[in-house]
Length: 73
Image 1 (cartoon, rainbow, N blue to C red):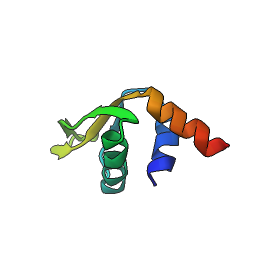
Image 2 (image 1 turned 180 degrees about the vertical axis):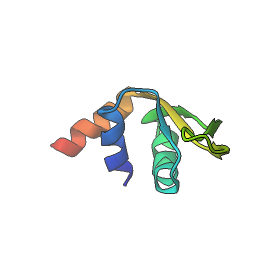
Image 3 (image 1 turned 120 degrees about the vertical axis):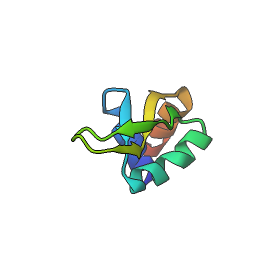
Image 4 (image 1 turned 45 degrees about the vertical axis):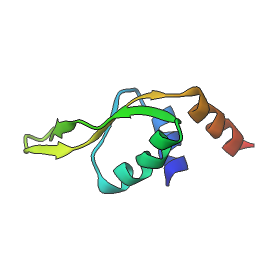
């Protein structure tokens, strides 16, 4: 799942807000490996609900881009 999420991040305008449990679990190894830069603020539900945990991805790093290139080979 982390590779699929990395691919999604590469093809999505940034910043990208992730709020689902599977996305949050998949982003953590990418953050720790230095493939993305992200912050973990409390975000507001876009549909008017209360605050929720979210990860805001702000950058795909060079290491993340290299990982995507290697996975295509």
